[in-house]
Amino acid sequence: MALTESNMIGLGTQAPDFTLPDTMSGQSLGLSDIKGASGTVIIFSCNHCPYVIHVNSELIAIANAYKSKGINFVLISSNDVDNYPQDSPEKMKELGESLGYSFPYLYDESQEVALSYDAACTPDIYLFDGALKLYYRGRLDGSRPGNSIPLTGSDLRGAIDDLLEEKDPPTKQYPSAGCNIKWK
Image (cartoon, rainbow, N blue to C red; front, top):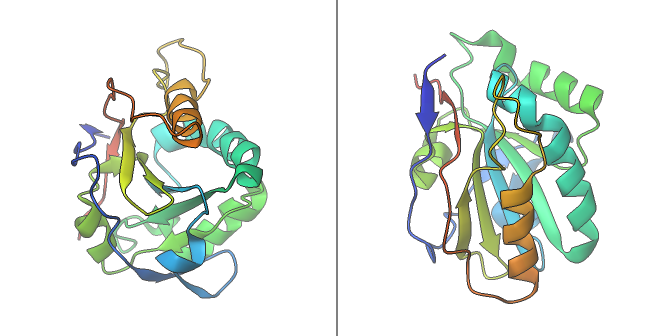
């Protein structure tokens, strides 16, 4: 596992549109289908990355805490499943069901969506406002596997709170870090 940081694309960037199969529901979902009234959190993720495994419980807690406030979450896996079969759509659905995902877990087989977002790692976190303009991109918090920093979700929670309070985007935004996306 090579530690890779996210690419910090420009705030205000319009969310690229997409339609992908949702491994949880079996339906194809587009960005307009998953968009939250107040904001949308898009996270490039996968099943096997230890950085994702480390934060999964907090991501679920944040998604559940903010859903009633108009913030929707979606996970997207863009990994090459030929070389990483544990990230296959069937395994994605199994994981989502076992962890109780209350949000879509989309499969980006062509990897075109990851490329359009300039995604680099898992987890790679993007928060878009109600108009789908980028408001925050970066880490969940300072916790990483083995660094003894408690998992709180403070960076993402703070950004979502600021968005809901119609404040300017946080001036300090730190890149996310995790395994690199497994490109074909």
